[in-house]
Image 1 (cartoon, rainbow over the protein chains, first blue to last red):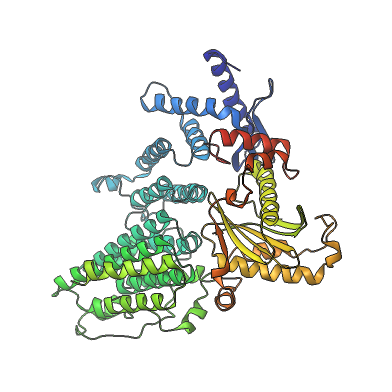
Image 2: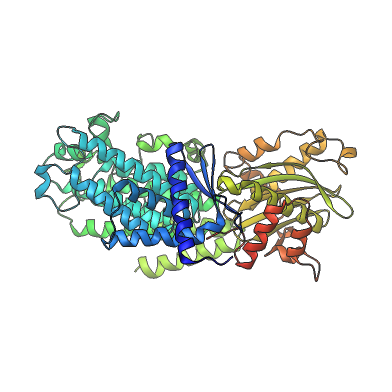
Length: 405
Length: 198
């Protein structure tokens, strides 16, 4: 059925109008999906509304997508105006149809930047562009709005990530949002690390999910290192990591999060990696993640030992608060770790069954070359999957050639 | 890491019949679910038909892995999972389900049974429980019992078919698939992207 350009235009305008009307009719629509339908039925709208699900017959997509894409481009080129709601609708539609659509994410980030500009308090003019104080002293409405925006963005990213394995765009958007809306916020970084644990445990070959954890680790290490370097006391950092309007997080908990040391952070991450590698043999992503984490740890240790004069105790103390470790002798090797130290992680442990793990054997608490080598040996001796064997051997080779100089 | 379907079938002389099935289609978009379910039924039945009794196999088809166990008494089970879900746990699940089914449902009823006539209700809860392979706590048991070298691996559905048989023909003839699903399959094949619309 050949259609002229005018007919296509009319058709698409009608379809977009049908979609708008559907949203007006049912503001609770939570899903737009494609109905496998290769041919159009005469004069029937391709838009179907069933409860909270909006369906689009597949034949119309090849007309709709170029139209919406074009509209977005015209907007970006300033040749056609779209109000904020229309923009959000269009980017949502595009993302739902194709979660990997880069331009839509870019426009979304552009809109968020406008929101940030509106929310930035006057006093923050001095700060670097993009950096916003979320823990504002007055706890004013802009922070509430930003918090909601942050939550919404995380939700959009999570949904997009679930639809498409290794959805690079969804995850890089998530990183961007954290870098711009939650810069330096320890609590959020810890929360993200904790809440993502379950996700990566059920998506063990999704590299983007693990890459996100690597980003969080880097950010946390930077923040924690900065916090210990700061000669001004804890009060300034509390200000940064404390959410206003009470999230049930009092100053004590914030202090606790901040003082969880870097070695402990690495220990826990390697522990998670070990657990997943042992439970799900043969996934290269897990081994790649291990490499990243161990390399980060190795690099951090190297940096720390170069600043010998400053805080040598950080290397050796895993269970003392930062305020208490100053002045302790370097070279002391504390083995024991307070495994009951409750961080946000306790929220999500039901999946990994912490108590069982404790009984399984000694926890890998202090990352190091010897423990990595014994981990590889253990895997190789018990493994029944040829891929797992290959990955373990490759990891050992990497340890020898890159790390063990 | 997902399980999509769990089915119990009887392998008859010429064809297999579905006795009971459970599906988790929550990760598929709402409007595609009925087609997806039909294709999963079609696939499960075909796999059991083409598998010999007393064998276990894993068949890869796009991003799905279908695990099948056909017992010597012709009772068969199929799990359709994604590529991440550990296959050992699937085979444990199949052993367990078929064992329980055979004790609860008389073998007299198998050759002529259908989901409407068979009363076995545990499949839905097994499917839900095993979505989390660790919660199901099956992992340690399987290490000891299952001899993985005996599991036959297929890289495509096509390798199950007889020489000269075409999957397209089987789809067109199938009674498990409605007209819309068949039409959709035809278009998707033309575009060389089965079940992928974009």
